Image (cartoon, rainbow, N blue to C red; front, top):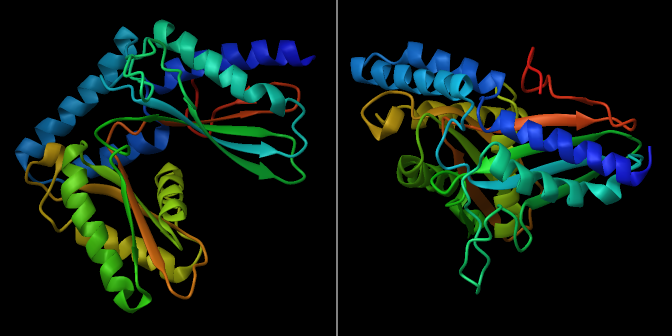
Length: 300
């Protein structure tokens, strides 16, 4: 297969995959929402969850996006160093985004800086947004697709503290962010926390955190404990679905970290709302593909 043929295949598949991912929540998120509903004791909370599920069913039945804010398209790419079509990926994803805007359809959200005019097809200056990581000795291309909504992850925050401020400052910052940003989104949330050395690195890590499959944990025992402690504490805030009284403001808290400078501790916080439209798809070097990591028993 030449590069032109590979580009055509990827564009077509990704256009269809975007149509799927904007309408159907990934399996792990849907299952977690079911679990959260069972933990709520308020009748009002149960009604809200039932409305969530009714909306999700209607989205599939009517073939429409499950949230009116279809966001900005973010692609987090793990590209094997031996994947033969790396050069066509950006072009294919840009074209797929443009086509999916009309075929899905997606709300037209993208505005270029300084022009202050909607581009009309969700492409624009450095948009869709691509984040690349190269995987040595691998020939696959894994793409994590995310619809970044204006009420959830886009208003994220990051700050750098002094080491003497310690973990207490980090915990307070997370709680302040969730009790503010979290209500701007639609709980129950997935809370991504990035711990690093500067604002940029902490912010990126917080995004990588909330994209992780649910049920996964930080690789270090202390990191895993921090995730569990934060989740337990946040769910004692008394906030539930739609910001009304309840006991499940968060589905999970995920922490990602990197080494830091001796003089800085940086924390980033991003939240994803219950309509966590995150989907994984993997292309192999022959351009066959698989997305069962997110959606089992589903076809494009």
